[in-house]
Image (cartoon, rainbow, N blue to C red; front, side, top):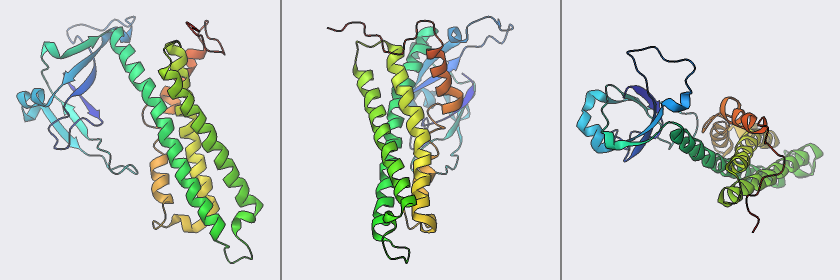
Length: 266
């Protein structure tokens, strides 16, 4: 195995996670690759343990660095590199389209979790802005919440929070409903991920506008909330390059129906 990766792959001591599932593409360097070959048929998932890393030696597994992140400061996402790394044959978990199915389901489920994360950020930002708007007059005669422009921002944010909460709840509910087709379950999860993560950025920015220049101070929660929230549309499959493309594939299918298909209503 040769290649690099970023993610929670090094453990807390840079000696590897226990275990890690590594997704790879099979390449035959002795011959040119068939351009008509389905890429899914070349996908494999390998199980890499700390013992596997230790047996390979330091030169074959390296932690290149820990990229500094704007937000989510407690997250470990090192850049790791595998060079002529040997994995025992018994550590081959799955191959070909079965591998891509597992990958799609894994990241389909995690899409709903991002919805919950983004909703939580919005709720915190709204709560902070609401407390400020109720208590601060900005040297006027009344609290700023009584001004239409401020109230409108808070109202919009509350509607976004409720909409995001419902989409996330529906995604989780659908994923638990084994009567639904996987395409319908995935669609609900994608709606939650895309809508809530995009909306959360707008919501946090609007709450910052409510508070004004005071929100720029690191004595408030707003800078860290903004640094965290801008990651959600980008990670776990970017909303533009990955998640919307998944939705595009779903809705462009001939069998796609606006209403979900229930296999068994009993």
